[in-house]
Length: 382
Image 1 (cartoon, one colour):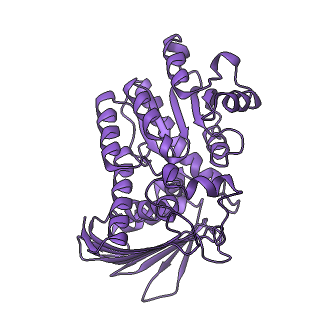
Image 2: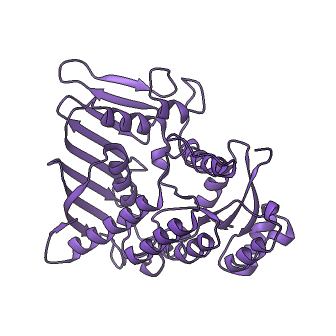
Image 3: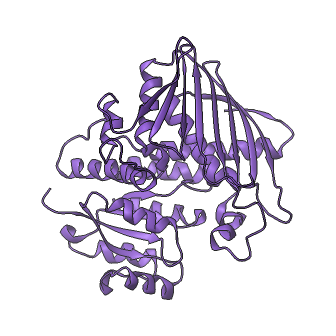
């Protein structure tokens, strides 16, 4: 292609953390440009945010509906190539569906939508439109997560017996809902949906297990608890997992784990060995051999798999992390769009990003966990 891909953003305006992360990640390869947006749910704030981001007046919209109509009415060669949705959860579905039905590519934050019914509608829209759809489960963008996936899929660990995944945070240990914007919507069932910690960070745990191991769930048993008085949604969740191959798993996520920051981590135990990866030290991956010492593999080296090497943006020894992981999701998503525009099929490496089907599985998992945690029947079949 002889031009940059153009995109518009919905949400991510003044006061947004994740919106700025998406913008930096999308532009990291220098081949993508933010040209349009509806950056807030209120027209005044949306327009003010767009002006701060130097968006041209004619593409600085007061609502996502106005952006959809405005971009459809532009010459085909000057329309946005994709839309990036970074709103609170309750505002994901309507714009995603509308833009997909208009034939526009979509990338959006997780969890995808609020219900399996909505998820099925998005699947139908993707399949009908042929548009490219990606979900920013950014932790799958880390090079050493891709290497972990390669190890499992290539049989390096043998038959998988046990998976332990954790995401401890401590930032909601006290009630912050009244003064913190991020805490307010993440603990509000009208905006976050039926789950708190489970939907916010537990969804990353589920996706990480699925991405690395490829194991299929058989049943789950969940305990949801809310420690902070008057909080409306869960802030601590433990889930037992049973997989169809006979493996067992444990998923724990918490936002009241005192002094913890963002230590998402996973351990996978197989019949030949095990692996361990921590998001707070993401550039290394441990392989534990029962017949020898622990081995430390480092990001950016030539001994890693093709997917891990593609995801490394810097030479060995130069640490890279959160922004680059997001950027890898955007890179594969936009390279897939470029391939389609060029009339060729994307490669397997280019297609390495979370899809609408991964999003639907995540929504189903949240629903099952909440049903198990609040219901009388504890073990629920998948």
